[in-house]
Length: 123
Image (cartoon, rainbow, N blue to C red; front, side, top):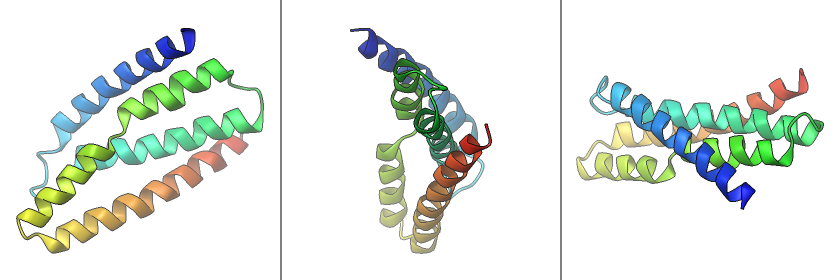
């Protein structure tokens, strides 16, 4: 039960923060959802760092990993919104922005995970 509460609490905080970031940044560009992009990239960086610390040493307990990686990062990042935004770009005929957003999100997300893992090795 404790693990479920940790995931619930972390996910709630992550979801609230994602909402605030997306609400404040998604309107800056007409065809690029900056808020969603940033939360997903930051979430990738954080999960790489958190799991890197967790795997490297006993720096984080399994409960802390659940709270931060599964809970917070799971609530903070959003694949469903990412997919919906891609769909809306396709429906509006914005193929260039669709591919730029799709490819940059995937490539930069993977690079952010790698950077997080690398940063965790420095500690």
